[in-house]
Image 1 (tube, rainbow, N blue to C red):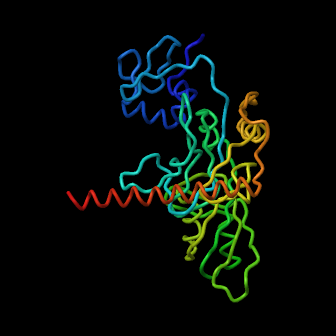
Image 2 (spheres, one colour; image 1 turned 180 degrees about the horizontal axis):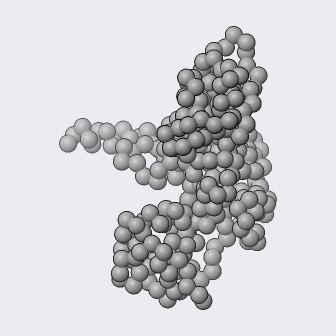
Image 3 (spheres, one colour; image 1 turned 90 degrees about the vertical axis):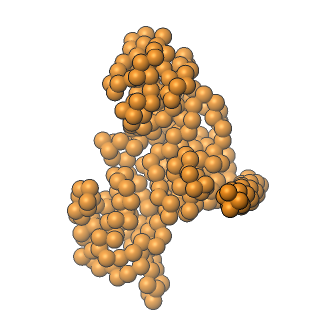
Length: 293
């Protein structure tokens, strides 16, 4: 078997996205055969790779590509761990053998809606990479007067601190005439930090609700409760893979997408309530222990 780039091997083993692995290599967290690895280094199947001192099991057969859809709630962060003990999007994801879930992009703490996870590092890397220009769609509620000239500027391009950005499209949704808030659907093909909020704020208006409803050709399932997740079936997985020119996956643990019937929805909501109660108790104990110190 031919040698492969180290970051690609790590990503294919589900350790993280390729860009994340490149950062880990630069931070000297990875070694090959006992020596600190360098970015771009190639490895053979027999090489011993360690991350943070832990030996990585080189899977001979790549596990099937899996994708989860999460309906993220506001107040949840996208980091795997939080020193402040705040809830994270990873808290309730199912356990994964021989790898880990990789978030496809991020949503800030005050943004809700569609967030995808995969165990395939190469898929995650391509879905996030600017060269593929994957379109995202958001529903946004704006406080303040929005003029036709503002909409023209937002569609033609605004100079932000990190470069020019714009919406691919902006559509006004029906709003009560006397309301100070107006709803819009916007699309864009970049993933800059807080890009949607910064574009609107550049026009002197305030974003007070932001919900992602689509990533590429995958739309949020409307009945999926906030905080709940579903695993995508093979058809939806391969829709994502086609968008970034990856070969279709042929194996799956699912035969069809589970329908969100009344029984399944009730089970999801009960599970979410129990999780919230457990988190509240854990935080209460943590705060009590801090006070005793």
